[in-house]
Length: 581
Image: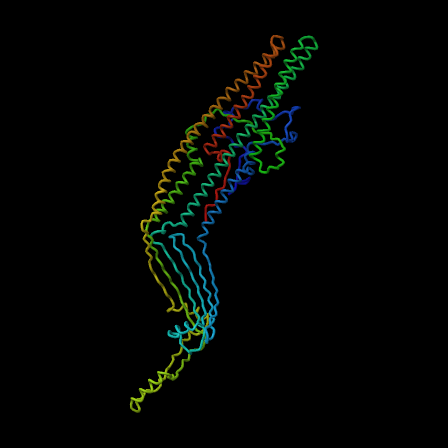
């Protein structure tokens, strides 16, 4: 699985939840909400080149995070690793081919040496449906062993007593099929099914982690917008104080003002410059936080560049529907999906442990084709008169002395029938003989196994029942958490929406008050102190307005997170992992 520039398709005009771009419903931003920062002498940033700013939209920031955020990369690799674990477990069903060639030489005192050669091979594996296992075997042997010779000489293969090689070949299959325990589910199928659910859980964790990162990117982006706007307002305030200082110095030179007034203006200028320095520091802190989210390499050149956000905060007069948000959260929250998958894992365990409490009844079957042959030429047959020696000769002689002439026992003439031609040959003949109609062999049987008490399976089943109740309680608890988070997020959006309206009213009135106070000051009917108060009030009102606007957009981002609609609203497509074996 991977989320990259190709997989994460982000629309250039992505709009936060609850925000409309329609000119009839959207409230336009005020002129003071421009995202640019004027160049100000004396404002320095450590480690960055302010002369080469890097324009950055919110969509670009999200795309950079999807491509380069290290936490997303770690979570993505967790999914990839879990995919390998699933493939590893599925490999138990891969057939295993085994070949065993063997040569042996045997000799006893006074006897000639015999040489035997065997090549046994088989293909073994498990069958997933039904839980059976099979073995397909193909065995071949060549033997000069005397015992084997004697065994075969008493059967169909007959011939001279001289040592010759016996060839045998066998082809067959053995199959064991569980009929009760391990029929519907066994430990192999249990582990694979659980691994599939674990993979889905890991994917849910990855998506939840990605949504968290995207929400952090959105919030930090708007924090940077506010920090730059705040810096801009502080710069404007410093410029006003500098202009006031220039004017008061001109009045002092003309004798229209007392020298003491210069100290008052210089003090105010120093205070505003201090505020500007703090605002500049906050820009650096926020920008570094955003870079930490979107830059992959700690040594990337982008760390030395400044970000200039190009998106303006958006605002809508429409309120968010709580019921719709709640439905989205219940349908999409990955924490609930993870608990649902955990319940499915527990159901698999319950099914398996219940199956293990049953007796084991296995059907065992074997079918084979066996062929034999013997090297040499025994097709003509032969006759011979045996010679009696020892006790046999004495017994025969004594019998003949008792019998009358003409009735005595003569040495018998023994006839050895010819060996059938289909038994004569080497491996090629034995291989051909396995397909004769008299070659098939088969066996069938049943193995019964009855566990006494079977406490292990019963205890495991009882433990799975307890886990089932625990998961149900965890699900209820998580649902309550989701409900509280959604309600709080909707309330935060509504509060931020109303704050924007009140902040705009305050800023507009502060502008009117400053304009009036300046006219009074120019007419000599006001003081520097009152003028500074009006200027500071306007600066604070402007900051409050942009703070309310950015807080509204941050609240929208948080609402997307708690309802898990971030991907859908921002047109992000995440590939699902491969859940097949």
